[in-house]
Amino acid sequence: MDNSNSFILQLLGVSNLLEEQTDLEQGLREVASLTAQMLDAQRCSIMLLSESPTQDNDGYYLRVFTHYGNLPQSAYQQITSLNEGIAGYVAATGTPLLIEDITQSQFVEAARYLNEANKSLISAPIPFGEQTIGVINVSIPLNGKSFKEQDLETLKLFALFIGKSIHIAQMQAILRSRFVERAVVRELAEIPSESGIAIAPNPTKLAKIVAKSFYKELTKAGFGANQIIEIATEVLDLLQKNIDQYKKRLSRE
Image 1: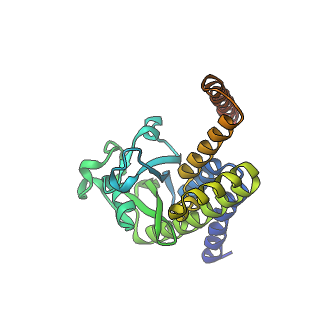
Image 2: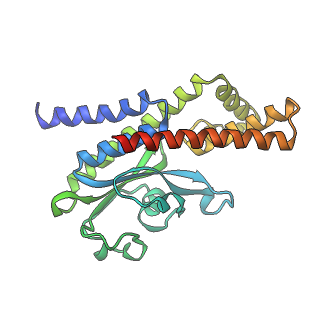
């Protein structure tokens, strides 16, 4: 099989990973792994846009959604404003970046991992139509090499497929659940001016829509504040059990 056919199969694999997964986070984690392997890199992170509660920076910021490779857990708590650092610049401008040596670039002051031996990285916006919904970053190329323009072009294609696949995966998730489907329809009816945002591939936005609808349904059913808190606590407990099971499975692999 020649390289072009192999590359096409890899791109199709990106779409299939997301469209076949019922868990978007798990699907994107596998995509991050595939991307890093395709580009011979040690790390790949996928950041998605979220709405800012303070409505700064046009109401959006970036946060790590999933990753492959060595990335500290604290990275998931970090918020990146638009136009802040490398990922913020890529998200705000829609311009992909190739940096052969971060210490020699204009972004050196914003770099978080300057102590790594290989300081080359590439970053590309994840597009959906004319919007940017996130950023994919790949760093620490293997064998001491630096990323080249061809690597950036490959990442841009991966990002394009990721954006389209996230949208398809989210629409499939909505259709799998009557409750979520009703929640989205209700949101569109209540806020028609934001209909484009409501159906865009934004997992954070969808989560807020579902939470809002769930709360309304509970109050309609007569549940009081303390009962709703107990229900929310039970949901968190179930989530924690699921996370613990996932960690145990990883430790056995």
